[in-house]
Length: 267
Length: 284
Image (cartoon, rainbow over all chains, first blue to last red; front, side, top):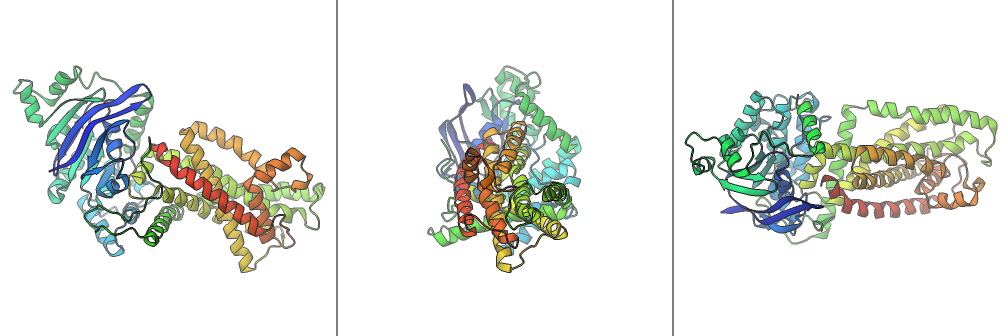
């Protein structure tokens, strides 16, 4: 069953086509990765799918609901972890979660158990009553994932979930995501520019470059597709995008400084 | 093109956990009020964890009352009728501190946008107008904390305050509405300018004219005509006017506290509607 679908989804900012006729279909239960360097249009796609940004043209639906016409219904069935660190540092972990159970209209009796379950699932039970500003970057990221699954969304959107994390924290976030998938069966759509992350976590990936999708498939298929047995996803990317991820600087000044700021906060 | 809805009812649900129900206006209003409350609750929780900001905010009204107020009381340059000048200006200074808290409130939205907090709220099924009104109410909560401080200072300086519960309730309403109006105005500016630097510039340009072109520290009657016109269009004037009647013994309202509050309510409602339309822009 196809739970997320886009048809020629396009978004322009002035003269710039940030997303150019992207058509994707994601199956229920799948972990789907959008791959590409900064500025490839991944975040813009996520923003349109999460109802934050109206498309310039084309269509998208989540759970069969159009993201423009049924925006408020779509919001009930999706979870979203933005690229930036969005947990509130001046509140405790517990409070961050409690507020969202209320915003998602969970019945009073269910709020506490859901919060407890999410804390447990993301390994934050011990830290629940501490202010979030005392958390490490990896913990904040895990808290945000906890925040996004309280209402048991059908589709979870993660925008660069491990950006700025050290390798250990990244590994911890990956572990939790794998667990989420098995425990929970949610569809996950994530963006990343770490090829190893995509290789490790995703059932299928779409390679994006300069706003359009250049290739879609399982990481292994894509590797075979370019002929190498020992090919890496890195090489696949270079093959389809005509550039390596590393050499592609992309991204505006604002975006770069924002990424740096996130990285600094994550310490 | 915009996603179509401020204030959409959460009645029609497609979620697996909630059965589809018929549209029920009462339930929608209750849900709207509840969500507004949740956003304000967030603010109260933050203040509880770190109340230092409230203390720092007390310095400015203290300076105005202690220095400016005391000096001008002696000069007797401003005709305030039977009212002592300090008693005349105390409601004005209260309104001023509410204004100062509220007018820079929008910067929090820019800050929260940069952190991704705004995006997360926008992705939740919360009506946009509830997000805006919740923020307005949050500013009101901070303003009330400020009011306690101004009352304490006024008491210390011998200002004759009214303690009638109905008057106090009126003061609370005037402060909440004043804070809601100016914080929503601030939010609208933030949604338009989108960066901290530009926002601070505009905030600073606005604050002093709003304050001086009002009846906060001198009566409108002594202003030149052109300034009188501006003052009468300034919502701060109505806030001060209501506070003057409700806060100090012998204070007189020019328009009637009821009319003042009605003007503020109307102006605030209009701004909330505009802000709810603009709010999603901040995340784009």
